[in-house]
Image (cartoon, rainbow, N blue to C red):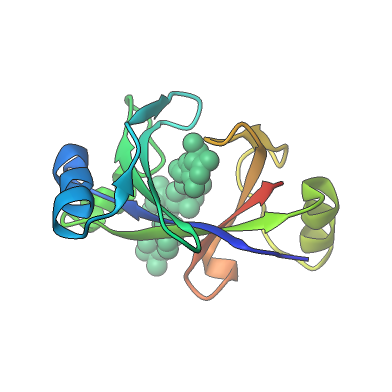
Length: 134
Ligand SMILES: CC[C@H](C(=O)O)C(=O)SCCNC(=O)CCNC(=O)[C@H](O)C(C)(C)COP(=O)(O)OP(=O)(O)OC[C@H]1O[C@@H](n2cnc3c(N)ncnc32)[C@H](O)[C@@H]1OP(=O)(O)O
Ligand SMILES: [Co+2]
């Protein structure tokens, strides 16, 4: 069911500093920040040859990553995103097997303009998983 690793997301306390570090210190191709108000984050995507890094910074009062940053003030790996061909079929299979799908259970449009869903970290060995339909 899950396919390619689309991105690994890192929540950061300083988005500009983290982006500059990937661009200047690590020599990566860094895209400009994009606000995602529907998700409560500002993101910066870093293109790698085999996947992407998604830098995350809270946007607005109710960001879902604020709690994570409060607990991890230096930042940390926040989630992994896997690609799926049919996000509704994936969701229904996962729910049937007892996994918790976060939010309303209906996909939202993510940063790449594709439907995304999130699975509770406690059901996947402490790893927050995002699914993106490609
Ligand atoms: C523009 C979209 C973009 C894209 O790629 O397209 C994105 O990726 S948007 C990314 C931001 N959106 C989300 O993360 C949505 C899904 N996340 C959530 O709903 C919450 O973050 C949630 C429910 C995972 C955690 O919320 P919160 O931290 O407020 O709840 P708790 O403090 O009760 O945490 C419960 C429990 O889980 C542990 N936790 C929290 N976040 C993570 C994490 N990222 N990875 C692993 N574990 C996590 C937290 O420590 C608590 O554990 P406990 O042992 O009970 O302390
Ligand atoms: Co993501």
